[in-house]
Image 1 (cartoon, rainbow, N blue to C red):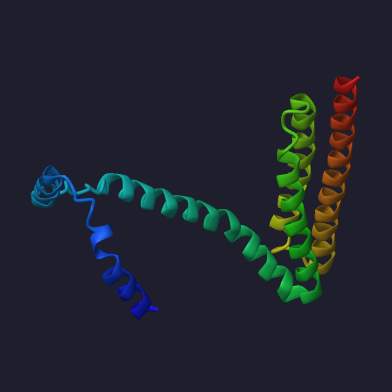
Image 2 (image 1 turned 180 degrees about the vertical axis):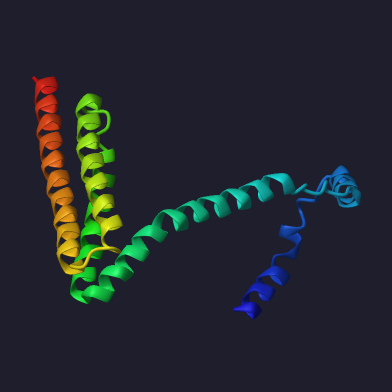
Length: 176
């Protein structure tokens, strides 16, 4: 292939040399080569603040989840199967809470009422959590804690179902 291209250029050299670049072109090129491009300044303050933000967010997340990890370890010491169930409920609850966020514009008052219901269940859970250390019957407390998480999950599912229905009704109403 290289030979064919070279042969073509040799054969058609005169036809190809018809167009010559403008003399100013070489002057422009050489002047651009002599110019130094301005160095891009890295905004160190921006990078440091971004890194600090990441560290703060990670620390808050770690601190918030420290309690869940400690509780899971307590429950695992009592019964590993309960700990697995607890963790499964926690993950499902977090998923449902994320889904609930998508409906915050549908009915803000209803969302606030739903949040109040979850706060009450969380307060009951925290009370059970504080009682586990001093309770002679830890398994009963753990079962109550798991039942509380189950109730939170059921409540969230019902809330999402209600919000879906409201959203569908609003959509139907606007299309009519």
